[in-house]
Image (cartoon, rainbow, N blue to C red):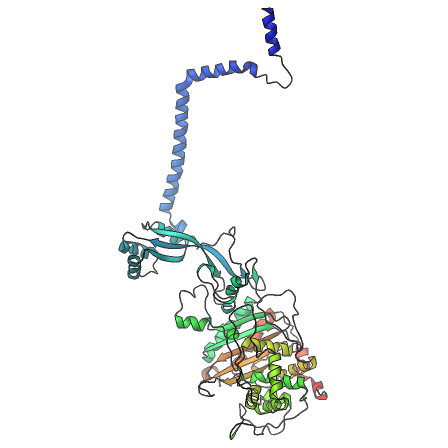
Length: 584
């Protein structure tokens, strides 16, 4: 017996770290089993009560929520149209202006469609009740004819809820992306628009997938505030002058950045695929600034004078007979726009101020047609240009650059130029003489000027001559005190049926500010403007429309662009007496 007890102690020897509970486990388990055995009915009842309480609680929550939705539908109907959650990355980058103001974003929305409805007539009636834009009869025909009908490409949360509760079981919903253009018509020709499922169809929107610009957001060179004033003033001008259309552009003469570009009529890219007829669509989406090619009239005289001064064919002390007969056809002498004769010989600056066709023709004859063509090509007026959008035009060049062509081109007829190219060329003339390349992207480096096309002293003299046009000539209504605006007006007959006259005219003003050291070039033009005597507009020339509109725009945008205001420098540029002492 003693031996057996000793063996048992050996087996149960306690070592540090052993679980002492093993000595009490059997006793504890026997107590638990005994308790459960004695109280089994009581425990079962407690578990049933707990399950019953949990079920009642969950069911009560469900009833309360359902009752709330039924009694207060306004909580749902008051929800605005769904905007995409920023946790979901758009497949297309957002677009901002140069100051990081949002222009274009993407939202996640829903597309509703229906497949194989059992009762097309009843289905059409129910759908019409929640989507009132549908014509019920037309919808019935579609439902009877097709197995699949798309009901709406972009529905709100409220519409989604209404469709779900309409009683139509066959409706399907698909998540889709949609582009939102936050400023509607503003800068629409530059931004462009996209079609179904974010497919870009024009402007920068079309460039994004084709150029694979899908990795980061885009900052355009456009200043949306300047863009607003440009479009707004041109729109007011179209109404005041009863013009068919109008366009304008503002370019940084140092960087080449396009600060604003307007072509009116314009369009709202949010609804272009829905609310425009075929004719409206074609007219509204045509980008006059970048796709058009026009004879802009006397603004071309800037190029003629720059060409001759750069070639050293003339100097500012030379004089020209403005009464001379220059034949451009058999038995027909060239006329000036106002057909006024100078009583004495005039110098090149006065030629520009008077906008003399005869004077410019003589200057072109001195330089020659070969050098004229070469200079205009160097200034960027004769070639197709490359921009970040695909909607770009080409110049209309005469098939044969004859002597007659040389003469008419010198004063703005016979050569159709793309407005953007012309504005860029003028920027190159006034910025010290350096070629710029226009761009729609915001640049980090401001000075992007390229090679020289005229000498800096020639650029200086052109600025002085253009200042005289605004101060003492046809550009007077574009003059804004403190900015010494420089520029030139142009009024050109629109060619039709192989001749000029009878088809209205096109007016234009091209200028720059501040005149002593230009930062921005502006070009404004109207197609077929009319006089408006009741509003004080006596004629349809550029003095009465394009000039005043450009002046209004400069007055509004110069402070926004932080352009220096200096009346003293304005006086210095206006006198510039030293030019008479210099010869080129």
